Length: 227
Image (cartoon, rainbow, N blue to C red):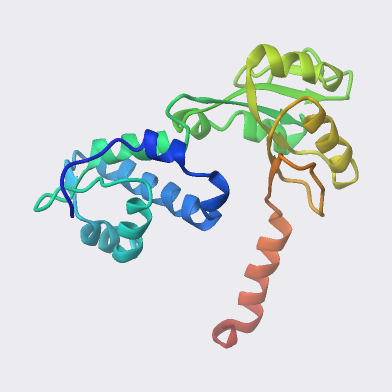
């Protein structure tokens, strides 16, 4: 480990987000969860090796990923858990909090809106949107207001919404994504099955639960024969 911790924010600002692989950012999120667990139990310092062994990670990969953003370790000590946790939250952009909207106030959308874990990690569900008159004007059990989707652009500006979650039937997904992009939102998490397209400059991540279930079904069907 080299020298003292150096601030991550300035170096991250100099890096193009396109040059950082999604696999790397996914691993940073895993490291953050691990550090959260250590912090909750009062652990003050941890080495990359101890972190890897406790959470079944790769020590060399941890050091390589963190070195991309700065020098966080202290020789003979390792990483200060609170300090590294703070840097990772800063790198991932959740230290400032991110406002999120959910498109679709059905069972899935309402379940996502009421999940407390999002707020704990810096994501605030501030609005839901739907087209059903009987839902508009009401709130989720956690108190998230449900708006008419026609008011999306106005609410996005007022609430400074940065991420939109799509939880609508597959047949409506593309139209909803188009509306989201037109409202100026640049990051979309899509739970609707099937492929959707986004314009240049908009980041899309799709979570197809059916694909994951099919993968698990394959494992059950083939057992030890599965690669």
